[in-house]
Image (cartoon, rainbow, N blue to C red; front, side, top):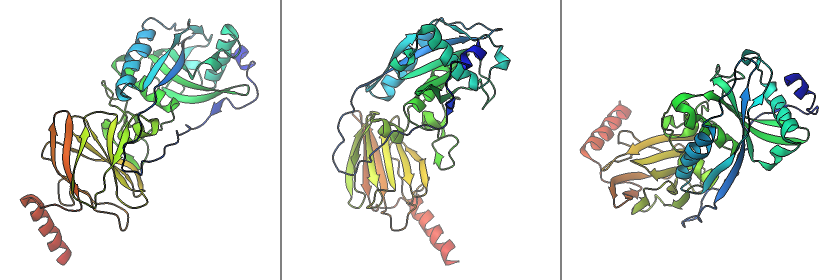
Length: 345
C-alpha cells in the first residue's frame, strides 16, 4: 500500500525541513500588553497499523483531546484549545521495521485516498500515531514534527508512538508546539532552560513543565509589563502564567530579563549572545545581584545593572525590589571583597 500511495504524491519534496517561527514583537512599552485572543487548533488524528503490528486506537481521544488539551489550557491560561477527530486506523501494509521517513508522506496520501482528496486541508495538523513504542532517536519511528507535501499543499504533521507510557502527554504537547512555530531548546547551544521549559524537555518529565515565558510570549500566552532597572522600585507580578515582567537591560532591548512567578520567581536571561537561559529560581527572601549565589551580570557592553532583592510571595502575587544596586548582605560583601582581592593580585 505504501508503494501505491507514493504514486499519489506529486513530484514536490516530501519533507519540508525546519519550523516556521511565529513572529513575535517584544514589549517595549511600560504598559501591559493586551489579553491573548482565544485560539482553537483542529487536528486530525490518524492511527497507523503496520503489516506486523496493529495499532490500538482506544484512548487516543482521551489522551489528545482531554489530557494534552488540558495541558495546553493550563499553559496558555485558557487562550489555546486543542480539538479534533480520531479517524479509523490506517493500514500501511509495510512491516514496522521497514517503515521509513518518506513513508509518512505516503501515509498522508493513502489517508486522503481513503477519506477524500483534500480532507486534511480542513485541519491545522495531522497527528499520526504509529503502533508500538518509540524508535531510535533520529530514526523514522522517533517522535517529531515535520511538514509534508501533498501536491501543492503543505500538511503540518506530528508523528507519535502509540506506546509512550507516562511520557505520552509531554511528548505530544512538545511536538504540537512545533506545529505552533516553536523550536527545540534542548539541542540549541545558545539556550539553557533545563527541565523548566517543555521545549527543553518533554521527553523526560512525567509532568511536563509549561513553555518558558519567552515561548509563551511568542504564542501570545503571556503579557509582559516592562520594569526599568535604572530606578529603584517595588515590582509585583501575579502568580499566573499569563503575567510576566520584562526588564530591558539596554536601550535597544536586545538583552533582557524575563520574570514569571510559578512556585518560585523564575528569571530568564535573553540576548547578549545567547538565546535564553534560566538564571535563577528565587524563593522568598531570594536575591539576584552581581554578588549573590547565583550571581547575575549583563553580557553586553554598556548594559544596565539590574539587582533583584527582597522577593516575597503573598496573596497570589510575587513582590520584589528592583534597582541598579542595593545594600549588600554580609555574604555578598564577602564575595565582593574576595573579587576585589583577586583583581588586585
